[in-house]
Amino acid sequence: MHGGDTDTNAAICGALLAIWFRGQENDIYFQIGLITLIALAAKNAILIIEFAVLKREQGFNAYDAAVQASKMRLRPIVMTSLAFTLGVMPLFLATGASSASQRAIGTGVLGGMVAGVTLGLFFIPLFFVVIERLFVQRKAHA
Image (cartoon, rainbow, N blue to C red; front, side, top):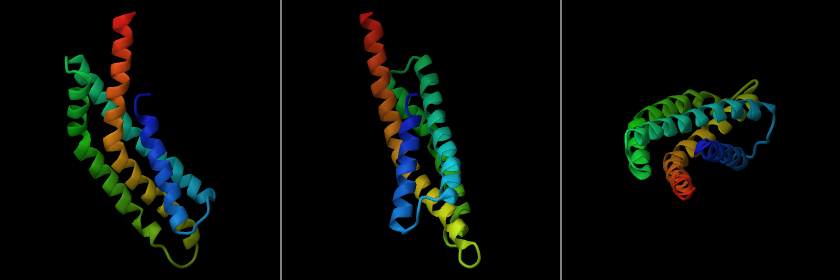
């Protein structure tokens, strides 16, 4: 996979940092939120890579394909992630009965989405270019 692992790793690190800063534990509720987070982060990465591959097939070099794919997917990724992040704000800010489970889900997902989107938008295209160049060089020498 060209960049999906990077995005999901950034999201997981962001989620773990968020619960650590908030003094929470890695419990079952946090892990349920983590599954959702991984799916959305992977989807974002897959879409950027898919568009970059299409641009490569149209004759763009790896760098230009990654830049064009990032530009094309920036708005949809930011809007989806922002809506998702705002949707978990009530969980993040929960008080009262069963608020511990709600805060665990909300904190992990909020921190993970912020980290995943912020880092993913920069590193996914970067790793696409690096990996594409490595494979193109290998094909040329083979």
